[in-house]
Image 1: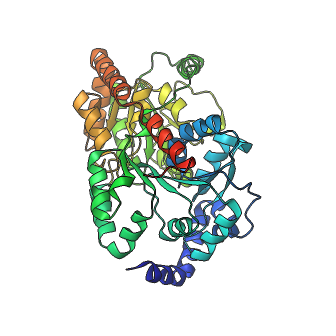
Image 2 (image 1 turned 90 degrees about the vertical axis):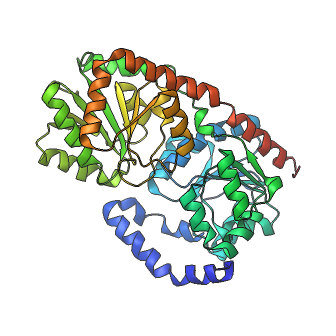
Length: 426
């Protein structure tokens, strides 16, 4: 498939795209709003001549935040436009940056929509986070001489096989990128095989290691546990869970309650549209559940606290003794393991970590990550970490050491972005 055929098929798929938006809007009403932005109509006023950063959703927005803040500090004269594709991503961008950045949805990858957006934004540099590759957007940038960077790039073996099936589309698109700043050498090789130019592929590491943790976060968490009178309660978190995982997590928690009747689970679904359904699931299973969004104080009889707020995940991690990171007991590829590790928490996950293979391998080899495959495994590991504080401390220390050993990717990436802003090409 070449780009012309891809564009034709994308136009033919517009009714299906509209139907998908409508179906998603039934679960999350925000999908029915700002639809015109997705076609480059009714875009907000955009000051041109700056840096455009695209972060598809919440995870990429959080990963991009340190880079964006550094760009704001180093290039205060340049407006920064941040785009995303999801309402939750939009909420996170607005919460993180407020009016200090320009923000809108990225229009669909239609040539005329991409051109209209670029005519409005006219960026000097485009930075796309991780693996969000859109052929027409990239081609429209190339036509205008706008350098495009794929930052913190990752490419799993499975994704590489998928791209390889459409080589006539993928290879020219990758060749138009000015820089692919990849996380690992293995991923660099995959991009090169797919058609990226050798001089444009740099192994910079993962900027996710360059986490900045609010130094007051741990104290705030300790204060809240004291307010709950839960300093001595065994407390664990299951974060970023997906459909099919919540049942496993709750089964594990019921097993823990048999041994530790005062155990408290912080359950944080990945997607806000699932908050109500997960709350109802907890209720059906007979677990005394309180919603974080209620603002109510956790009581001794509460067994589950549902994390149904946005922007609080790091704080909720800080509250817990042990962290399980979801998207990994189902074949979703996992989520960021470094956030709980940076907070000094022993980290557990399921086996499906294909989005974070290198990070998972480093944490595992250092003894900072435990893997589980079932509710019984999960309950057993959580209980063991509560029972064995020395083991918990070793995992905590190992995780912090892995982060320290891998930091510096952000500085390497920023140096490359500065080079491109100055017009210096490979």
